[in-house]
Length: 186
Ligand SMILES: *[C@@H]1O[C@H](CO)[C@@H](O)[C@H](O)[C@H]1NC(C)=O
Ligand SMILES: *[C@@H]1O[C@H](CO)[C@@H](O)[C@H](O)[C@H]1NC(C)=O
Image (cartoon, rainbow, N blue to C red; front, side, top):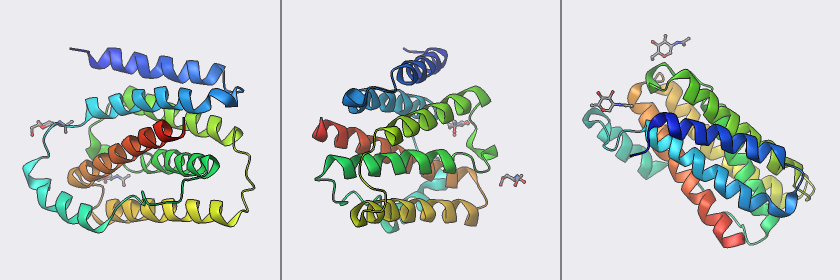
């Protein structure tokens, strides 16, 4: 079994590797895939394998109403990169909300933030499309709207344990979607 300490170290190592070679945009998706994998492992190590019983109703009703817009038009690689970058940025933002009930230790949370911010910056520096392009703006808007619903929910539920369970489940889905997108585009 891999220990949490090992996972944390591998996540930190990933951050460093990704940071060093950030100028090489040709390999950006390959490196992003590795970093995303490390982030996913870190997230998984912090999540309970079963949803706490008192949260099941909330999980079900939330999942029925809110979905990551996976039907975004990502036929162009550039648009896929924009979608991924926005997801990373928004995830970093949401994990800076009141985390008391989330039960993560400080070091893991810090590593998670560092990974998200680093990947997001690397990807940003490799985007070539005009940020004013209508399609790019629409992509960002749709991702933002979805995260706004997560933010609203957290706030409405007063950053409770169940609300954080749900956020983590949703973010996990986002990471799995990123992985799928990268495999498709790479
Ligand atoms: C996982 O569930 C157990 C039993 O409900 C609980 O004691 C523990 O704190 C939970 N861990 C996390 C990270 O939520
Ligand atoms: C954070 O959330 C917890 C749990 O809902 C609450 O008890 C605490 O007062 C909140 N802290 C802040 C700074 O809002």
